[in-house]
Image (cartoon, rainbow, N blue to C red; front, side, top):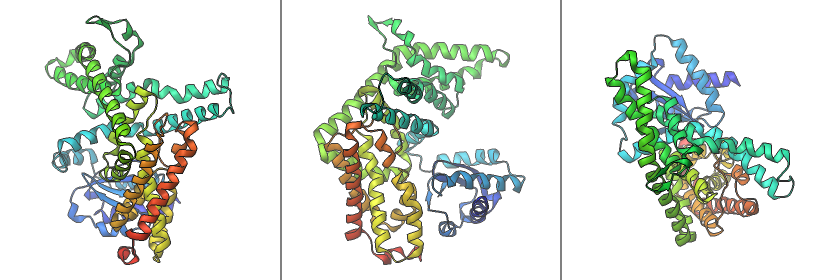
Length: 453
């Protein structure tokens, strides 16, 4: 298997124009993200045809869809090839490319969501693990299979809930990194918000509430702290920097946090929570359909990770998240559409692509199906969105909600309230079926798949 991954990495590097044409590279859960020096040297069509490549996305980087698990191994081999090429300073070349990348797709809203996504994407493995342990433990306890006061239940609860109690610290660290500040000071921004001792502070006749402002407040504080730190460092003598800069930065940020960021963060958090709940209450199944149907285009842009703080704020504010099950239907619509294409097509290459991506799609990783199958074909992407909308309407009607944040699809079953598990699964099947029917009847003809010959 390592030889196969090495061969694929070599082919990718070849069609990227060689190691000399690679400015920088990294990977996420499913994609190898490469910044080429000269886009004209990249043979995108040949990369798409490679066995093991599920799709290609062009944004601020060239994103090669490889699928979960495989992307880690191929990226490792890719990195070895780059290193062995010699004479390439990726950091230096990345810096040269930085100003050019900022100008591409750089609308303020997109940049904001991408920066927020960059803060939360590294936390996804921890969120998934903690969410699954928390969800499974609650389900087992509510089903009566494990006494709530047992030592095993207590241990599992502590293991699963620890991240959510101190998540603000990790968010602060990542926000500081993203905005050029010291990670340790960013962690302190999170502590300023969640510290239980905050309850002893009284401002304007009212006691502060620990955690008030939530992750929104943490983001404000950490970003502000990074900005203050950089500005103070410009005027402080280097010999005194280690003492003066962090001390003044923390003092200023602490005061501003308690006077400004906690109240404003709380106001925004309340607005997001009440706004979404009002939309779902008033819009009902229509709101569920629209939210479910429009989520996949957000995934295509890569901006969906920017919603992570919204999900976490819902859980923090009301104890559960009614939005995540609705949006999870986006992946289910894709699965149904892919099944329909698999049944109708007579092209072996397309069948192999679908067969390789379907398991990931059912487990909540929909990008291989999106970028490898439905989006390149065009119309199936739209019928998949319709199927997702039907599933979203079902989830909204029955007010299905999760108790933690995690991967969508079948794994999300463990995160919904125990008494809603069967309803969630039924909604998932409905989204599968709707995506299948829409695509089979209206979304796909075999002649549309000429590129899979």
